[in-house]
Image (cartoon, rainbow, N blue to C red; front, side):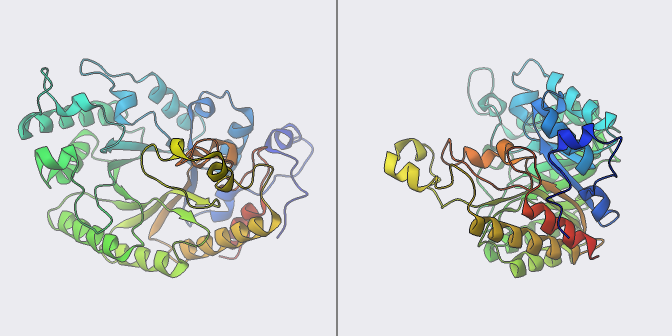
Length: 371
């Protein structure tokens, strides 16, 4: 089913709503299979991005925040919280009758250094850091009790080989910091769904580590409702079979699965070491940024096929997958334009820089229409 002719752009479509039939939307196409959503930025939840807001309101029934509920944003100082942006995010979701996700409570990134130190800059001991974690979680989750429906409680706790990542949380508290974070979140809002969120679980070693972790947490009675698979994918990785196997393995543990940060990187692989992008030569930057004037048709076709393939995998797991969230709304919003090399033109989402549905949107919609 092709839709290139039915929309000239979400803003124009909205303006013609009185005279045109209702246009097909992802949230309607997937219906009761699972929620479909996007990570949104401040311009969007403050309704300063007319193009993006039109897409969000038309297409999605759940939202995640890119940054405003991360520790560095909402709790930047030891002596105070700043909920101004987070409040606007939640209010946007409520106005538009969406399932609101909180992201993220405990992570090793975007967490200020002071969190792990006392007033003199010395490392906290276990009990002091647990008190600080509990205060943060109780304050943040408690503020939105009954309003935010689900929380990414712990984010990215595993190494690539499946072992526990040695973060300040791990070094000071120990392995049970994950269970404690879930315990505190459940205390703050017993009705909220609580998630563990991770990337690259399609790698066998990392998947085994995640399975062992979730099995242990479940055996201890920790209320893990779902595991989030980030799915920051590429055109050639991971395979559909590996994604399918990962979803099935997690479902066997008795948890739901969320696809939490879906996008597809179409650019050449770039070095990911900190600062490596700044050291690249002009020739290397050009080589790593080949599509500055638009995505070639051949690559567009690969992207379309890939999104259709992923959608078919997700739809194989009714009752297990409860949410699919794209990490961004249009290509212009994507973090992949600036990571790991700043200033590149990437094309990882379903809507182009003008907010027009790409052929990949058609593939996703067509997959949903076959269920």
